[in-house]
Every structure is written in C-alpha cells, then in structure tokens.
Picture 1 (cartoon, rainbow, N blue to C red):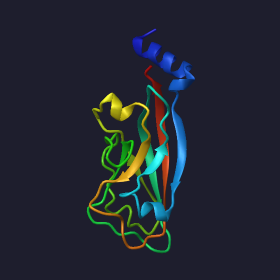
Picture 2 (picture 1 turned 120 degrees about the horizontal axis):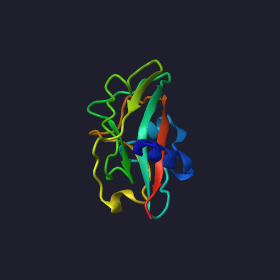
Picture 3 (picture 1 turned 180 degrees about the vertical axis):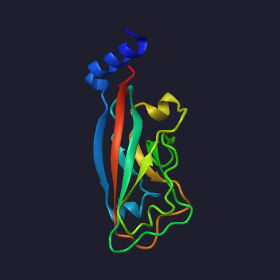
Length: 154
C-alpha cells in the first residue's frame, strides 16, 4: 500500500478526522452587523483541538431589499474579528448586492500560518473585513454550507 493510501486509511478510519459539514443560516440582522459581531460558524472544540476549514460554499438568499457595500468583503477567521484569517478573501462585489439567489466559494487560505494560541481551542467565525457594515437595509439571508475537520493535537 502506498503512503497516500495508508494516510487515507488512517483518516477515513478515524471518525475524529472525518469531514464534518453543517449548514448555518445568517439572518439579515446578523448580516448587517458582521463587521462588529462576526457570526460563529463552529464553536471551539476543546483544549488541543484545531478546526481546519475545508472548501465550502456561501449562498445569498435575497429578500425584498438588496444590500449595498463599498470595500466590504468576508473572511473565515479563528476566534473573532481580530483573529487570524483561515480563508481567502470572499469577494462581496456583485454578490451581496444580488437580487436573485447566488453562490460563491469559500476557499481555505493557502499557507495560513497561526500560532497555537490563535488556533487551538478557538471558534471559526465569519467576519466582514471591510471598512464598515453592509448597507441598504438589506433583508436577505446568507447560508454557509461549511465543511471542516477537527484535529486533536494533544
């Protein structure tokens, strides 16, 4: 058996390392406050445990009033808005302002480096990294189709 085959057998055979998925709906009130109050996607998993973001999907479900934005993007981070980003920038231009349902990718950050104190036993959150909150009084929702893995590094 090859090394990659053995690694797959270890990962697939250990339920702690299996890919986990969840669907998180973010209300319009929460969308309008993502800069000040990031949305928790996965709570901290305990001492010595690290949450690894895997490729995921973000869905916009527009309401009757569209959002507006200027220089506002999203990122998945550890801890809170001041935490280290673990995703690439999630571009909001032409996405958050949509008036019809749409999707975009959430991609893990390539070579994201973080100290253990910033990653172990920390939540994953969705944060508006822009210069202010989304505007326009939008009333649609966002849905995060999240994939992740929890590593026990004890």
